[in-house]
Image (cartoon, rainbow, N blue to C red):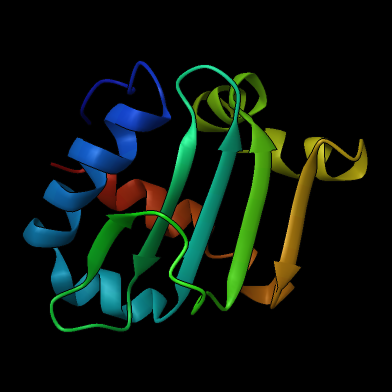
Length: 117
């Protein structure tokens, strides 16, 4: 398993695109379009389209997301190191999920792609 990213920018600009390129079939199994809105230092906005062929991860919100994740950067980093943190942050009101909540359950599968390069 690769090392953890230092911030969301490294994850979405470098690691996720490499993971999608290396495992396009696994990405399409997730079969979702996610928007990530990460506030604070090291954050930003990205859209990851795992339905596309090939799957893509681009900066900005394309407006096509089926599931949008909004979280502060420090909390996002906690989610990357602790798979159980997402649920805790959600119930604390620090993680907002809009759109299809079932797709949020597939996020761990998605992040595993980025780590598996």
